[in-house]
Length: 117
Image (cartoon, rainbow, N blue to C red):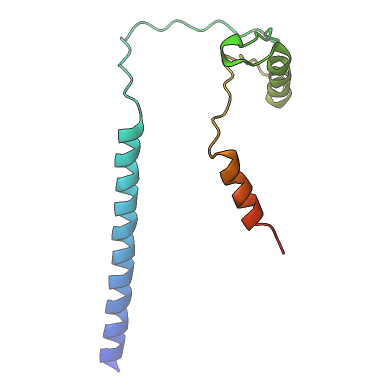
């Protein structure tokens, strides 16, 4: 009976040690790959920090012409952010369109193949 308990405990220790090792390897690969894909940003020179001026309560939306976003859309996004902030000061600095993750035909194939019966 003592041998069976020893084998069971040894098996559990080996399995959990392997799981911990695999978890560490996957975490390390994620860190390495994310550091390779992020663009390097130059270090900003250190300067004295001054207290920031309070943000205006209702910033005027500015049309983002370079991204092709009309002023009405910018105003709607700013209004949505203002309603979620609950009266706290904020500033919408930029609005960018989300990149399409897959082509339209790929998305149509996924929708077609994952439809419920």
